[in-house]
Each structure stands twice: as C-alpha cells, then as structure tokens.
Amino acid sequence: MITEWGEWLDPLCDKLTYLPPLIGFAYAGIISVKLVWALVVVELFGQFFARKILSLMSFSVAANNFGKIKAIICFCLMIFCALLHKNPGVINIGDEVLVACIILSSASLIFKFIPNRLYADILSTLNFFCGITSLFLTYNNHFALAVLVIILGQLFDLFDGRMAEIHGGTKYGPYLDDIADFVSFGLSPAYIIIKSGGSFAWLFALIFFSGVAYRLIRFVAVDKKRTDLPEGIFNGLPSPAGALLVLGAALVFPPQVLWGVAALSVGLMVSHIRFAHFGRVIMKRIPKPLFFVVSATIIVTIAFILKTQSVQIFGYLILCSVLIYLIAGRKWLQSDLLAEK
Image 1 (cartoon, helix red, strand yellow):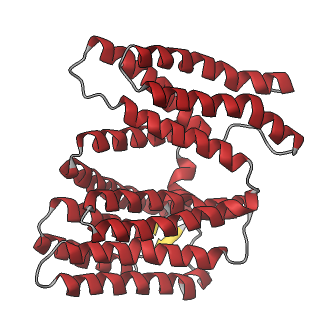
Image 2 (cartoon, rainbow, N blue to C red; image 1 turned 60 degrees about the vertical axis):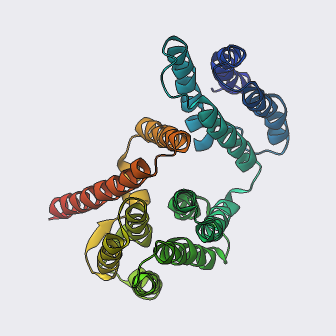
Image 3 (cartoon, rainbow, N blue to C red; image 1 turned 90 degrees about the vertical axis):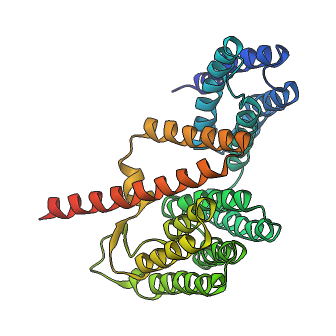
C-alpha cells in the first residue's frame, strides 16, 4: 500500500474475489441478476474512473468505513450463496443484502468527493430527513418501517459528532444536529405513541415529547458547560437510547405497557444517572476489525427482518440492544471511575 500501484491493486483484488462468484450465483438463479450487475457497475466505476478523478483532485482514494463494511458483507454474501445452493430451504435474504451492498458502495464513492468538513452537517441533515420520513410512515400506519427509518437516523447521529471532532464542521452544524435530534428522537416516537392507540396515548406522547425537549435543552444549556462532567459522559440517558426504548416497546407491547415504558424512558432521560457515550467512549474501545464485523452483522440482520417482515423479532432486538447499552454503559463508566481513584 506504499505505492500508487499497490494502493490501486489492493481494492481491485478484493473486487475480483467476490464479484465473479456473485455473478455466477446470480445466473444460477440464487440472487438477482440486475442487482448484481448494478453492484458491478458501481464497483468498477469507483475502481477505474472515480479513483482517477479523485487523484487528480488531490482527494484521498483510501477505503473509508462504508467500503470496508461493504467488502465484509460481500464476502459473507458469497459464502451464504454457496451454502444456499446446497440448502435451498434456508430463507434467501440475498437480494436484500445485495441492496445494502449497493447502498454502501455508493455511499463510499460519494463521500470521497465531499469535503471532510461537510461530513457532520450532511449526516445531521440525513438524520433530520429520517425523522420527517418516519412521521409520514407513521401517519400511514407503517410502524415497523417508521421505526427502521428512525434507527437509520440514529446511525447518522452516532457519527455526526465524531465527524465534527475529526474533520471540523460549519457554524450551523450544532443547531442542525439539535433540530434533527428533536425531530427524530422526540417528535417521531411521540407520534408513534399516539398512533399506537389508547385513551391516554396523547398524554404519554406529550410526556415523552416534553421529556426529550427538556433533555436536549439541559444538554445544550447546562451539561455542555459543566466542568465536573467527564468528556464522553451523559448526564441522564441520551435521547436516542430513550427513543429506542419506546420504539421497541411500540412493536411488541400493548398500549398500556408502551405508556409505562415511555414514562420509564423519560425518567431515565431527565435523571442525573450517568451513561457513557456510545460513539465517543464505547466505540473507541472496540477494535476496528470487530467494529466492522458488528456493523456488517447489524446490516445483515436488518436485511433478514425486512425479508421475513417479523415485527416481533425486530422489536425485541431493539429492546435487547438498549438493555445491553444500559448495562455496558454503566459498567464501563463505573470501571473508569474506579481506575481514576
């Protein structure tokens, strides 16, 4: 990788490892021919044309996180297709995974042409539009899709602050981030509570909405200025995690239980219980290879849920992920405090 030729050859070797087998599996009828060729076009365009343009513009041509996660998923898809050929009774999620690969490959290509300082603002904007889209889906009673879109917004929110730290941002970035969080993690889940039904749904939706608003205002006006609060530590449960509690409960529990979960979520958010920041504390301690594997696993799991359309599994996975964060966030924080002492 220390020469221009080596830097060009390395990703080409990856592509030549998984693209030909995927084309073969497509013509064997296991996965979509059209989707495979769409992936091939995006990959080859990035390899032979985009890299040349980027080098002329003095932009980095190194693989980013989107590309690395995509490569892992493509290798997994290749193995899955081989197993599926011998076990036709297994649920075929090949096309759904292929769509994810095309999206990741396109994102890897697009973000290479964008100045680094705009990364954070773009991610915050995408988070905002996820919140708006979720409101529309909820209005049409597509609850599972609405929840999925909010989770996608949370992924954007997870990285926007990190990108701002690494690459900087614009003066509008913090305001855009707060507005996006308010819509995606406050307004959208509150609307899902209302649409879930029940006589007191509007009341608990208002309580949750007010709790998120208070949590965000306290974070901006008070917590950011505190000197006794360690970096990467939240005072109270962060609003994305609070929203996940409500979203998971909305998919698996009746309205009365959902109201109780919403009240619990608000109590944790407005409390002074400290939690570690997932992106700035927990993720930093996860080895890079493990991070890429876990990210790929999450994407494949979402593809399985979309294929099976199992709302119950989706809801319980969300609740389990929040529970793991609550336990891990607290344990990690306590171990750090003990180490400091």
